[in-house]
Image (cartoon, rainbow, N blue to C red; front, side, top):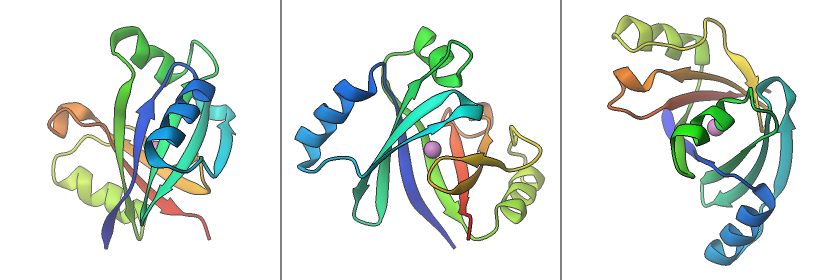
Amino acid sequence: MIRLEHLGIAVKDLKTSNELFKKLLGKPHYKIEEVESEHVKTSFFQIGESKIELLEATSPDSAIAKYLEKNREGIHHVAFEVDDIKVAMELASSLGFKVLNEEPKRGADNKLVCFLHPKTTNGVLVEFCQSIK
Ligand code: CO
């Protein structure tokens, strides 16, 4: 099974963007979580079965900081939930997609995550995620 879990949106200022998305969606974020290993602070909005994840860099080393040096604020990645992330990584790799990390890593929202290089996915940074039970 695969489903759209969330859209990741890179923002410069989480507080400002939380207000903007609250206005747009008619409801506030339900959590804020910092992922220290990734140097990001995230917030989540539930939209039906899926979510919006806002990401703000907490250090210049963050992938989000680097992204915002070259791009405007906006959609950064698309995340699909899979049943077994290791199986999904092996399958993607065998099909010619470039998996960016060798092992799944700990992401926000109690998930194991990995990313596929946009060069192999029509320019879209794809995240696979699996809930940690
Ligand atoms: Co994400």
